[in-house]
Length: 144
Image (cartoon, rainbow, N blue to C red):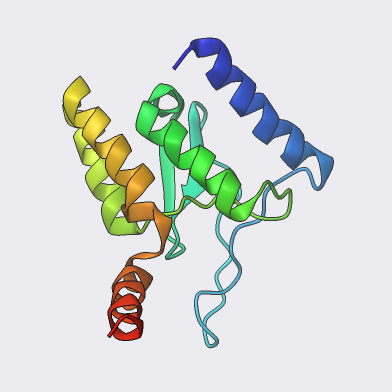
C-alpha cells in the first residue's frame, strides 16, 4: 500500500482518539473475579493492539506498512468502529496474531502475504473463531 495511505490511516486513528480522552484505556476486566489495570503506554516506536480474546500485543511501527495489518485495521474499523474510549481491537485471536507476527519477523514472501490477506479477508476474521463452527453447523441444520 502507498505510504501516504498508511500515514492517512494512522492520522485518522490519532484524531479519533484525541477527540475523547488523551489516552486509550485498556480493558479493565478479564473475568468477574479479576481486575487488571494494564499499562496505557507503549515503548517509543511501537503501537498497541488487542485481539478478540483481549490479549495485548505491542508491535513495532514498521508493521503499519504491512498489508496484512492494514487489512486487519480496515476490518477492525468496519466491525468495531472508531472509538476514543476503547483500545484498537483486531478481529482475530491471539493464536493467529502470534502466528502472523512470527511470519512477519521471518520475512514473509509476497505470495504468502497475498494468501494470508485473502484468508483474513474471506474466512478467518469474518466471525470469531468459535462462532465460525457454530455458524456452519447452524446452516447445515436449517438446510436439513
